[in-house]
Length: 476
Image (cartoon, helix red, strand yellow):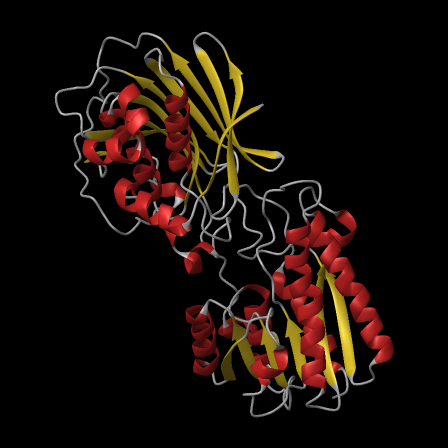
């Protein structure tokens, strides 16, 4: 494939497009909230990528025929800071195939067809419900989208469209650019809104009606197997189909009331437990289990202070003891735990960067180093720092079945976890002060592992409770 252009999208690019398009879904502009989505970090709007591709293509082709249709398939996320490449996959007389990729993978596939468009303007009959623009994404669950329909004015006007995408606007008209941009507002803010992922867009160009600055939409099909919804759209000289998915909301771990029924009230008493990464996921669950059993817990957070304070408040409300500590596993451990009034007797290490990311190549050194900085170097630094403060400390190191199963695209993660296991084995052999328990955890329901389709996952409480009992039972 011929490389046409490259771009690294920044947070300022995101903000600019979010303001222009109206799509301020946290998945694109809020790092804290994005970490609790399937992306794990802010990602570029799919429609921004599409319009950038059309703009770059139009800039290189001075004598283009009229655009008849456009189709885009958003197969994977493009993250901020990644070098996105626009590639020409195929060029025929009336069909152009483009691809946007990062490294060896293709994230977006685009097909442009040129030629005369349909003569009759498109309109969705019977759709009259006017929807006011919103700055906060609507929250809709999958069961509530089936009868969704309405219309709204384009958040992006023609002048802004022409300024942001001048060559594309000259080719197909700024109103059509605004109409295409309106589809990201539809998916990300209106229907399904907050918990959405844009999957595919297929539009035909048509004559612009008298009032070309509004988009009508109507859900035409739903598929619960994939949590997919299909919507008809029309407005501003474009008409067609938008397909998207309703992603699952952030995973909620079991509450204290439930967990108190599973452990004895003094089962973990007389322990001071530091849970690194205790603001959500398995760290949150572990902290709650120990607190339910009478242990004193300190939960750490790196970015999600609000989540950490929520967990701490729930533990305290049930009569448990919980403190909150800011901790960055990439920085020196000793300085960060110096504020603890008492040295921990037990440490659970759930620090982790985003795990599930598209593969850039068979092996990526930078990504491997990112994982080993946390899973190996960060753990070792914490072991030394805590053992310097107490004669004996029990540690839990969560490994993964990925070490042996090695899922596609997780080479660096699997290698780093395997290296962590080797380190733990040598710590147990060489350091009498450190008692290390290692467990290869199965796939468990967390924000990191959330998917659209149903997958087999183990029960987190049934998995973690025996581990907690084993670690807590080790002599202090």
